Image (cartoon, rainbow, N blue to C red; front, side):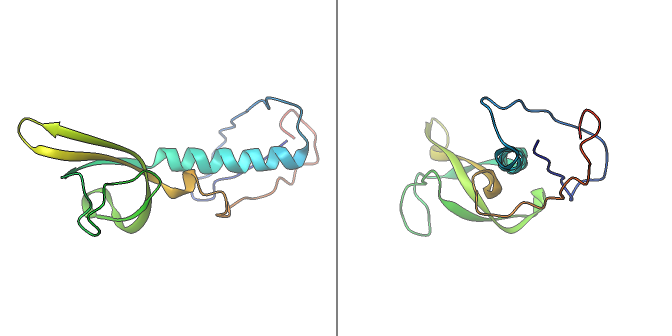
Length: 130
């Protein structure tokens, strides 16, 4: 059984049960729970920008998948945070010329080294979720 608590959210009971694809020991379940937590958090924070041109202004290279970018976007409450480029679409429009659609996600989605704020279960194993 793996167990993760998102300490940034108000406390409420909202259990997610994920069945392992193969037999798993408690350590593997803990790792899976931590991965699911990071992946779902990272996926929940995504944003798409459309920028003019196909090249980055900073280095004159095309936008690249898996690159990290610093985003400052007061309208969306983002202030100098590092995000990860998940998808890039190069578009040639009739009215705007060459533009790039950039999908950004929170880097926690793919960062397996970043620690997860977890609270271990204090359950004794009794009950269905114990």
